[in-house]
Each structure stands twice: as structure tokens, then as C-alpha cells.
Amino acid sequence: MNQTSPIKRYLRSVSQSLSIFQYCGRAIALVWSTDRRLTLFLAFLTLIAGLLPAVVAYVGKLIVDSVVIASQSKLPADQWTALKYLGLEALVVAILAGSKQGLALCQSLLRVLLGQKVNVLILDKALTLDLAHFEDSEFYDKMTRARREASSRPLSLVGRTFGLVQDSLTLITYGGLLIHFSVWAVLVLMVAAVPAFVAETRFAGEAFRLFRWRTPESREQNYLEFLIANEAPAMEVKLYQLGQTLLDRYNTIFNRLYSEDRNLTIRRGIWSYLLSLVSTAAFYLAYIWIVVETIVGAITLGELTMYLVVFRQGQNAFASILSAIGGMYEDSLYLSNLYEFLEQEIPQPQGYADRGTSPGDGLRFENVSFQYPGSEQLALNHVSFHLKPGEKLAIVGENGSGKTTLIKLLTRLYTPNSGRILLDGLDLQLWNLEILQQRIGVIFQNFMQYQFKVGENVGVGDVKYLEDHDRWIEAAEKGNALPFIEQMPEGFETRLGRWFKSGRELSGGQWQKIALSRAFMRTRADILVLDEPTSAMDAESEVQIFDRFREMTSNQMAILISHRFSTVRMADRILVLSMGKVLEQGSHEDLVKAEGRYAHLFALQAAGYQ
Ligand SMILES: Nc1ncnc2c1ncn2[C@@H]1O[C@H](COP(=O)(O)OP(=O)(O)OP(=O)(O)O)[C@@H](O)[C@H]1O
Image 1: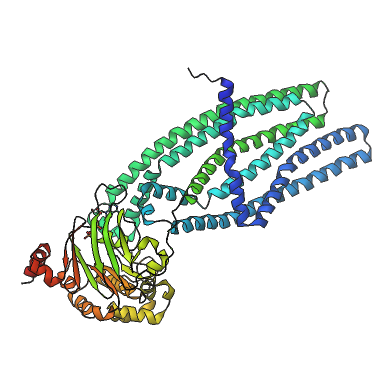
Image 2: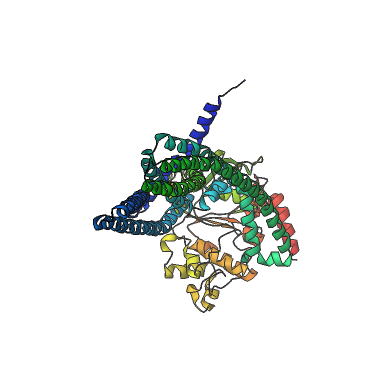
């Protein structure tokens, strides 16, 4: 049987409790790197605010003793001494109040700076993440936990650490005063304080585990809030009358979380109270002892007054140390979370090549297979094709056949599980990622609708020319967006979307034209990928775009994904995908002649127009 002695268990609890201090250093380093002067000032003021209460208590003793002496001797010199001590106490109290005010000031300035710093650290890290990280719910939880409270927790930990130092200094100096009376009194007080300290840290740890465990629920709550109170889902929520159901779900989650919170809070409150009674009892035992010693005349009236202050204030300092520790544990655990996120290893993209081994070879897929993490099915299964510079490839296939996945692999958002993708004869993995991505212009079917100006919405296609007005016009012209942009009162300066004042909403087809123009910003790209580029456009716009498409992209390889065969047939080559496999490939004429799947689908669509 595993028998651990109560002393060992007790020591283990204490050492577990001491682990709260492990993140204090990191928090202080963070604050130090945010603003050195403010941190130094904070430390200096903490020192003053920690030491002065004992000085006040001691001067109090001097006042009482000198008053007793003066009242007995009636000498003006003694009376003057008493008044001088009084003046001294007033001065010390004024300095103490000043230092407390200064502390509050430093903290509120640091809070803003530190909040910004931590948010930037998190966002910087988020920029280095792979797409797969955003799709991994566990990792996403980590990021949500880190972002939540990012602006308040680090400073709160620093504030509490400094507060703890301040209160500990006060207690130590009080102890110094009390030690004159009896070493034993000091020892008894210290030992009596430990159970409350351990209980406090334990409950704080439990609270944190609860907080950590329930991140998925909190995220679901955030999501429900988004559905209920945002513009994008508002239309469906209203028309499908989903509002009340969503709100009920929101309340159910809250009620569950609340009942757990309530239980913990009540248990924590009761235990903290009971254990703090132990230390209060010890305080009062020592207090009785002092009173008795005064009655028998072993200590002076001044000393009694001083110990009275020491006990009253000491208890306050002790209580605030306890609550600081409770909070510090939660703060530390938050920080552990933050660092867990910030220090998560992100595999750095390998590959440094800026050109291929056989320039002009174009793009090759060689037996490429891919499975999404956590999925059992292959999304792409031994896909091979070759696209030469200037050629246009169309990909067709039923929903879920792997078309978009193919593009994600081409743009290196994911890496194939087997097979190779070569650009100009060189495996994509060996290319420098930035250079590779600059060579590819993509619009995805779920492209972003930025709540920016029209011009910027086009400009994001090539961030180097984000603000280049001439390029906007050129790209918008190719994307057939220019006519409606010119009709807007502020043209390219019009803000899009409804999030900001005077924003203008566009129709689905108009947004698609903006997105298409975005792809045409990439004049230097030699591969253009358009995933369902014209699905929301009217027939006339589509014809206009594709009539000129060859001429606009004459030197570029283009990959078009579309369910519209009017668009597809203009491609040099068509790839028919089904369940991740290439069923057939060839030109429109070849495939019609082959009378396979493509011919069947084409006939179906053509029949619809007759
Ligand atoms: N992020 C993802 N994680 C896991 N599986 C995914 C993910 N994205 C797509 N899939 C799965 O991979 C398969 C291929 O999806 P893909 O988006 O490539 O299809 P698609 O041909 O572009 O379809 P559509 O015509 O509907 O756009 C589908 O079975 C889909 O469920």
C-alpha cells in the first residue's frame, strides 16, 4: 500500500502551491520589455508602499510613548518631541498615499501598453500558422484561450506579484517589530497562515482546470452570439425564425457552466473562511498575550499601540496576500496557456529555390494523393496531369470530388501525402514559399468580402500594389467590375459592406466581379486559378469575361473550376474528377467523342437549354 506520511503530503501541497511563482518572472520580463522606465518606477513605489506601514506603526509607538512621558514630566521639550513625532507620522502617511496613487497610475498605463503587446504577440503568431492549424479544433481552442483576457491577465499577474511583494514586505517588517516581543509569537502566526494559503492555491487551480476544460463550450457560446447578433446570419435567423432556439441553446450552456461555477465558488468561500479563522485565532492568541504583558507592565503603552496597529494591518495585509495568491494562480495558468500557444512549434516552410530546374515545363501533378487530417477518405487519389505555360485547364466533377483540394495543394496550403507536384521541373516543397505563392493568383469560391474600400478590395490581390489606382482600374476592367464601380458615387473610394458607416453592400455577382478583378491584379503570376469564378454572374457578364479570357491570360496557365460547361468548353484541356480520382482528361472535343462521363454531363446541361 502506498503510504505517504501526512508531513510529506503536506510538504507536497506546499510545493505545488509554490509553483504559482513560476510564471511571475516571465510576467515581469514581459512588462520589463514593454516599458522599462514604468517597470522600474513600479518596483520602486512597491518598495516604498511595502516598507512605510511599519514606519507608521513605529512612529505611532513613539507618539504614544512621548505623550505618556510628556504628560508625566510636563516639560515643554517633551511636549515638543511628541508634536514632532506627530508631524513625522503625517509626512510618512502623505508619502505612503502618494506612492499608492503612483502605483495605480503606473499600472493603468502599463495595462494599455501590455495589452497591446500581448495581442500583437498572439496575432504575430497567428500569422505563422498553417491552414491546418485553423481547422484543428484543439489548436483553435488554445488560441481562443490565449486571446481571451490577453489584455488583462499579464498585467494582473504583475500587479499581484508586486502587490504580494509589497504586502510581504509589510508583513516582514511588522514581524521585525513583533520579534522584539517574542520570536514564538512570530512563528505561531506564520505556521497558522499556511493552511489558508494552501487552500487558496488549490481552489484557484481547480477553477483554472474548469476554465480550461470548458473552452469548447465558451466557443460555442461565442458562435451562438455571433449568429444572433451579426449582420451576415441575420437574414436566415429571421426568416427561419431561429432566434429563440439559438437563444435557448445559449442559455442552456450558460446554466450548466453557472451551476459548476456556483458549486466551486461556494466551496471555495466556505473553506477559505474556515481556514482563515485558524490564522485569526492565532492572531488573537498573540494579541491576548500582548495585552496581558501590557497589564503586568512588561511592555509600554506605546508598544501596545504599535502591536495593535501591527495586528490590525497585518491581518489586512495577510488577507490581501491570500486573495493575491488565489488570483495569481489563475493568472499564472493563463500565462502558461499563452506561452503554450506562443511556443507551439510551427514547422518552418522548407525550400529556398526561386526558380525551377527546367523553366517553361509548367505544372505537373504526379500521382498525387491527399487525405485531410482526421479524415478516413482520400480527398485526392493518384491524380496526374501536365499543364504547359499558356494552357488553360478546366476541372469538373461532382460536389466533394476534390477540385478545391487540388488547388489547396497547388498553393501549398496543404502538402500531399504521396506523389509530387512540380513547377518548372522542381517539387513545390523545394520552392521558397513566398516566391511560389507570388507566382499563383487564386480566387477561391468562398473568397473574402473585405469591409474595405472598393479599390483595396481589388488591390489585396497583390499587396505590393494595394494602393495603386491605375492597377485597380486595369484589374477591374478585366474582371468586368469597372462599369458598376464607376457608377458608385465615390467610385473606387466607396467602402464596401455594412460594418462601418456609409458602407455599401454589393450583390453576389458584383462581389464575384470584385474577386475576379482581385485575381487579375496578379499580372506577374504565371498560374491563375479561378474556383467557380462566374457562378453568381449574369450570362452576359460571363460571356464578356470569357470572350476575352484567352487574350487577358495569354502567357499564363489558368486553372478553372466550374460547373458551367459553357465556361469549361473553352479550356485546352478538361480534367474530370470523381471521388478524388481522374476519370478522364482531354479537350472538349476529345471528351465528347469519348462518350464518357463528361459527354453525358455536357449533354444533360445542353438539353436543359433546348
Ligand atoms: N478542411 C477539410 N477537412 C476535412 N475534409 C475536407 C476538408 N475540406 C474538404 N474536405 C473533404 O474533402 C473532399 C473534397 O472536397 P473539395 O472541397 O475538394 O470538393 P470540391 O470538388 O471542391 O466540391 P464542390 O464542388 O462542392 O466545391 C470532400 O469529401 C470534403 O468533405
